Image (cartoon, rainbow, N blue to C red):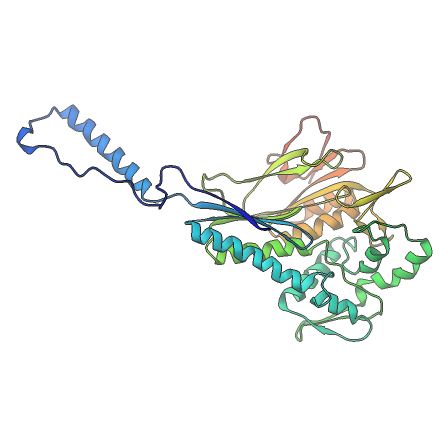
Length: 380
């Protein structure tokens, strides 16, 4: 069930109107000359009173928060707008946009465009919407940036491990049979006709490592078109912000500690017109014989990546942050941080397998870390 919280600014009536003012005038018959100093004081008081009255006539923006279960997670939106009606309208529009995108991309919905592309693998190309085509196009771009460490064609391996459900250990023989099916080069796109074709039977796209970030981007755009001045769209660990809070402060978020209970954070970060996304081995996993098998697969080995515990990426776009955190998790701290430093308007925090925290150069003065955490600072 969706929920919301609206905050009304202090100093404004419940109807958002100016408070009543006294209209009584002083008795002119009793007026007498006043000293110059008293007149100056009266002018100051009148100016301050007028300023207060004018401020009361211009209510502060209203904040509305709503949440709903979408895309397999709890989606929360925060809408800051000039009035309650627009704040509610923008929040509702943001959630509706994510619901629309879920119908296009979810592999749990047989009629979604991604499900249709997967079902037609090896047989025919499938027409898709501009949003789906752009999602796949951007995924291919991030795959190139990460040298294949991010790969949306990893669907068959995701199915084999089944970590989203109870989890299982596929045999080496099973993974060997799957390997030809995760070749991104076997994905064909006709951009002019907007058609997508998986050329090998058994191939399957899995956009779980990038779809939520792009959904946050598009939902934030829709909220602004519906009157939101500022806001947040959060799909679990994928967050997009725009603007600032009514008091002028940026939005503050915490980075989850990958080896502590939920809610214990490594540090805090302020965001404005930015996105943040975290990939971690603590999010979905199962344990067997003391080994953690998590959901972030290395497309090269088809097994869980073993070089990091968590990766947090800050970027202008949610789609970039979401795709990069997965790919950089696979690359590990050294190659991953080198890529972060090479990309414009991208910053990151990597927790390696020893628990050390790698911080990109652009976050050194922005990130408030727990002082007990060992830090490795990136160098340009």
